[in-house]
Length: 315
Image (cartoon, rainbow, N blue to C red; front, side, top):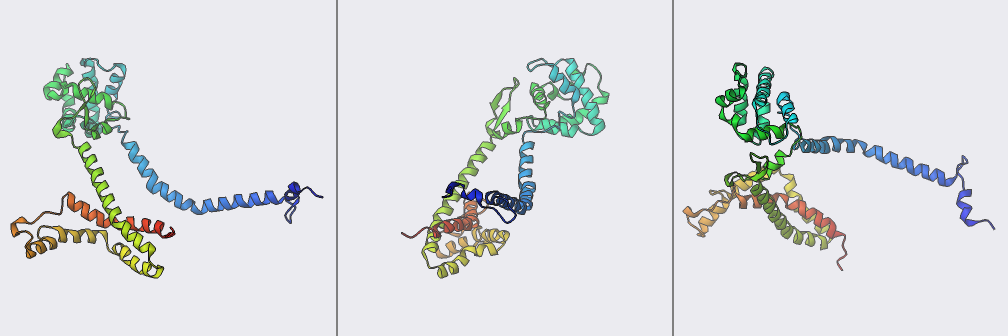
């Protein structure tokens, strides 16, 4: 009796190749064919979605506005560790860079980079670059005389941190932090702490909208899922109806509905809920944002829920 375990190896194709090898080759060709079919779409997604995101992430830690336009000052920072007093030769290097910036019209780019951490320095760099050719030694006294900000340790701390193209200063500013004269991180003044508050507010509003969409969409999706297919498909038209109208039109219609002279306020005044002088403001504020965003995003919650509930047995 033949060994059954070796039977598959005895099977061969018409051209004499082992059947197992021929099947593996066919499957490999099918995989490559499928890959090349989706390759254009993959390339499109990479070029239009992934690459821009990576570029923006790279820009969040990279800015060479100062480092590429102030080589002499950058070289001085590299030769002198942090905490070193700023002597005359540092100011001389800065003046040399300012002269070159004026010739190449790059003082604005350098000042913009420093302005991210020390507000108001764009005009300081531009004016110093225009006057750089007229400055005479000692440059330290001349620069400070032209603008006292050149004597502020904070601007030198900012320039030292900007001497490298890669930096964490943007994330520091987004966290409502700043550097002190000793290059340490401290919290910004209370009237300047805006980013953390905005992040928290954005997440809170997003969670409220998400919960509101879930509470409204789940009963509708469940109802559509248990109805007969013909009835469910007919009612699905009402779920898809918002997609037939421009987002701009839908948002503009909410302005007409929610504004102080809008439909809701007029109705409340007409039935006597509140007087003419007590109209409520429901637009261009947080309640209006929640209402409009819930309306716009509700179909995107209903459709995934319906597609999942539809395949779950009612039992």
